[in-house]
View (cartoon, rainbow, N blue to C red):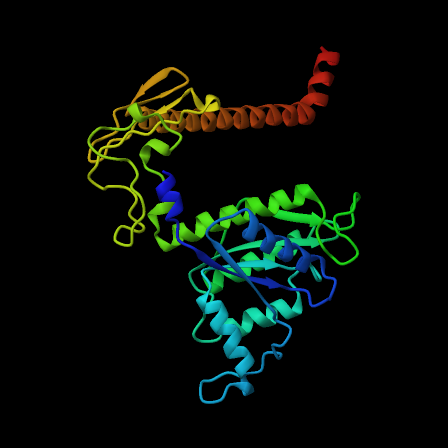
Length: 324
């Protein structure tokens, strides 16, 4: 295992800050990430890319399919990176103008963002830039950027105790630990997208007991360039069960090319026709409910008719009784 970890490939991470302010807190987050990569994490080569020299997007600047030199250099840096680390405050519920401008330049044909892993960290007021992060994730859908889902990093820069010093450097130990977790997740996800098997475990390393996997073949296979996207064998019989304590009651067997035999739910056994019976019971119940509703409506109508007749002939009946 130590040899496998030592052979882990190095990934290149491009770090972009959405704020151009000299003492930007988000730039401080990136400085912390750079320090962590140098001191604590093997296999990550991070480079900070300054987006302030980029001109505002103007397609008139594109001449003969070429972009201005500063834009070409920026696009080349993004193209050579394996993954992206964004750090941006929140402006009007969205990302900042400079960052959106950089995203637009790199998305011009050909799109150099495509098929890269990405992560977001942010420092701001209130929600810590959460809404800008979610908007950036939405933008990434069109760019074919693949963001890690967890962990998320939002930091309220103005909530005591102080998170930054006067120069915008992060001084909060807990926040530094959270950034390190984000970087580890970004590294693992990047290697996974690239199809590297060095970051993927064998079946014995998954949180499942080895005796709960069929001996006919592995349930999961490591990623390679040949089988990327084909993690399950179509013709392999497999049996997966959850083993965590909170799911001990759950036991589901599935067999390829065979009809489901049974499944157990809270120690109760049902055969494979249980769903069909449930549908029939629901249909019968609906018809019974309709019949009851019809009978009630008919009964109420008869009662109303009786009341109306009593009001019409009531006086004549009273007079007849009195006369008699």
